Image (cartoon, rainbow, N blue to C red):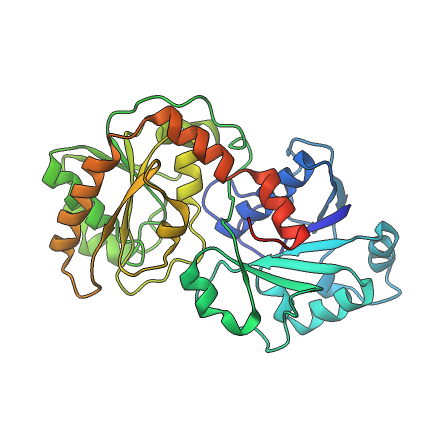
Length: 342
């Protein structure tokens, strides 16, 4: 099978050196495709030149091509079976024009809870949409999406080292109001535990409003890390604490796969049924902190603290074994290209 994995205009590299969820998903798909022994071609000018593996490369963007162009002819000669793309492309007219001329199938994963697709973007056969959780499947039901977990990682994060029983708590993501790490900080405080916040500050206003929490003595602001450094932070954590704001819908959280593949169980805040946390976790890999959306941050922190206590009893080696199987990039690739749920 010949598969093209497309970049798109982005401020991040492909895959990024740190934050960048969709870009990291595309890299996991490409890596998984090689594991599945498919013929993988990285399409677009933004793919890094230091990536492992023997990939074909075509440094063109489909939306800029026209039939008869040299770049278009190059893609035609590849005779691709499937294109894997970021979720915006199947609704972009200029991109769809080129894709229709190529005659291959296209698949994508919904990583934005609010993006509106063209009514005919997906037909369930030649063009297919995948979603992480029951909540997201319901949100995009008009496009008949298939539910499956998303696998995401950066270059150098494909094969995490063996699990260890870590010590302190870790939190991973972008530091802003939507991700609400201050709730994790308060939960750690209630337990008398230290917590490391891993990720970039993308909302300075949020950081200023919660400066007291983010700079508390039991908090370490690690910043944005990747590769071996990120894997080490994850595996050294006893529990990964997952939070987000009550009004935020998580479309395709990478942190569950990253934590479980490293052997770190997850204590996850769940404001509604059918979330990504429900889809990703089981009793052997984490604990849910379920509550109503009208709960206060203090109440959320208390329920989350209780989930942390439950999660830290789990066995790191078992968590990793389940995580490496559940978030296997080769399986994820086959689910996408074969059109079947995991």
